[in-house]
Structures are given as C-alpha cells and as structure tokens.
Image (cartoon, rainbow, N blue to C red; front, top):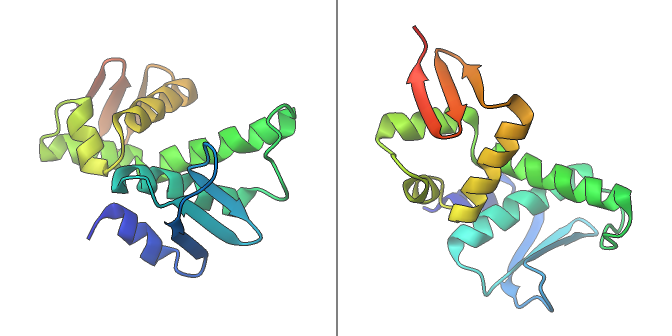
Amino acid sequence: MSKYEDLLIKHDYIDIEDKYNLPGNFKGFYDNDVILVDSKLDTYQKHEILAEEIAHYKISAGNILDQSNMLNRKFELKARRLANESVITLQGLINAFNYGVQNIYDLAAYFEVTKDFVLDTIQHYKQKYGLRTHYGKYIIEFEPLIIYKDL
C-alpha cells in the first residue's frame, strides 16, 4: 500500500475525492469539508498535495484563493509547512538514513513524494532550526543534509 493510500485511510473521516480533473493549475482544493485531488497527478504528487489539503482542512477557514491578500498567503504557507512536517518528520529523516538512504532522490522515493517536495521540506527545516538541530540522540545538519548520532 502506498503512503498516499495510507493517508487516505488515516483521514477517512474527511470527504476526499481524487477522480476528477481539476480546472486550470489546481492540483488540490479544499472547500466545504471536501478535499479534491487532481486525478491527473501521479501517486507521489497526490501524496504531497493531499497532505497540504489536509493541513488546510485543519487550519483554514473560508476562501483563501486570493493570494494578493497577505492573510491568505500566510494560511497557504502554514498549510504547506504543516504538510512538509507531517510527511517528512525529523524522526522520518533519521529512519531514512538508518535505512540506507543517501541522496535526495532516495529520500523522495522513501517518503513517496517528489524531489522538489523533499527540497522544500529541507529548506523549511533550515528556516525553522537553522543549519542543524538535535533530535533525540541524533544531530541533523540541513546543509548538506547529514545525520549522525550525538556522542
């Protein structure tokens, strides 16, 4: 079972539809307690888009389509960051490296997302924690991405 399917099952209390072609450049959409995910996307893209739309479900209220409004942009950024942290956790990064993952492409395959999503997540963590952070018995350096046990 894919991580996308796992996410669908975990959030089965939300009405999620992924069988429609969405208009324009929409990849996902949340409104009136319904999440739509574009059917044209591959499974990795669906996984990351669904994670972001679930974040909108949790934090957004009303229509935030007008991105010229600063508050709407903040909601969009907050949802993206929540999606990053929910899909690629710090513990998940440690698990991936302990599993033998050695590069961005392997990370994308491990988490079943696109390379761009991995890079966006690492950039988010860099902004949040700086160049490194301690997590449990590990030190995670974000540039370059290196994980090692703290002595």
